Amino acid sequence: MFIAKDYEDNLKEFNRADTTKALILYGIFITVLCAQGIIYTTNLNAGMITGLNFIFPLAQLLICLIFIFFSKQKLRTIGLTGKKLIFSLMLGIGSAALLLTVIILHAVIIKHSSISLHMPSLTVLSIFAIGAIQEEIIFRGYIQTRLSGSIKNLLTASCVTGFLFLFIHYPVHWIAGGFSLSVLSAFYVLILLILHFACDFVYKKTNCLWGAIMLHFLYNTGQAILII
Image (cartoon, rainbow, N blue to C red):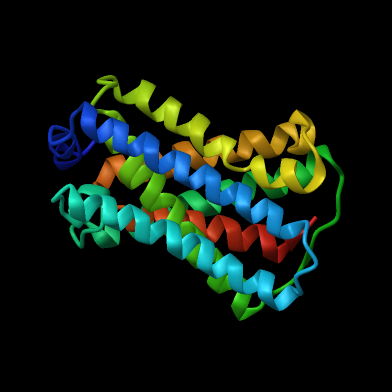
């Protein structure tokens, strides 16, 4: 079965008020991203910008947890559970390997690029880990499940979440470098959408978000290691 029964049961807890909260959280997310883009246009030194790259996602995570707390909901409603943990992590690792393989094949066969390896610093890996946790909790764990309060069709809810997930990768570029729809390549947009639906699959299959977080983290890390 593609969707775990406990995932479907989880969705029954949400209503339109939860959908409204999810959209408010998304608005806060975009606002923070715009603030982050403005930071990149200032004269702040690299150390301060790195520090803010930790603070921004942690602040967004805190806001999400506040939403959950005041809604009197449990962490399991955003997929933070130990049930099916190993299966979830295995699916995440396998999906990440497939996604990175697609990226490598595209670089070698289509672009005829050479590939070299570079190990990111511990600081960069930490930012990747926090970013993966933050985005998966907010998008797959919170927003997508709460959208079900208004959008009953799971595929439609996933597509809407995919669009919202894709859009967050634009504001920083637009503010720092000017508005352009081509700021992200068509292939990168495709990969982001594949990443979304792969994370979506892992979460729905297991009702455990940790596999999706692992997939997202390995994707980010793999992109940093592979110099194409």
